[in-house]
Length: 185
Image (cartoon, rainbow, N blue to C red; front, side, top):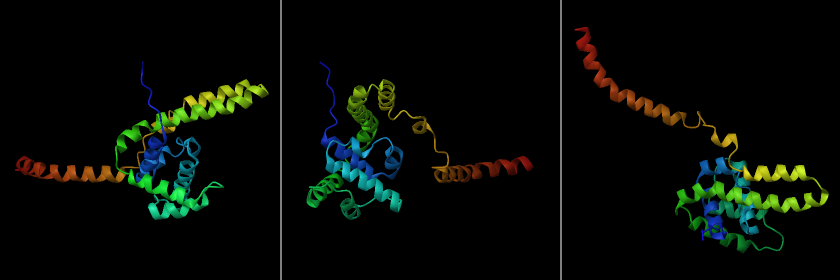
């Protein structure tokens, strides 16, 4: 019997911990990991709050900022304390097996997208719109494989490349100078 990993609430909290601690992860995955993919409405609200804060401030929220932003994303009937406890829990998970959760993020998004597509298909079956079913299921299965995910951001790390190039040049320069002097002598 094969073991299937379940993307439970604990796993989803680790995904959100990556959202609040790694700007690059948030920028690359914000269109793939949608707030509605989180099984708990509190986690969904937190994901919405992180994205909204990032869109406004162009940086990641800390615990205090996210605790303030969440007030705009609370579900009716829920208490602020529930959200605050979840935010504290997410920040406590920061830095734990982050690479693993980042690697699993696309698979999580794909599974959740397929679940959403199946739910939406029910209404489309009743209306007889089979082409739309095909479209939403295909899109869900292809989650995370969009060509934009594969594009290399040349300018994104241009500064790092320039520093490396300059360091290589400095290291090479002493070696070239003696040879240059001997060649001209």
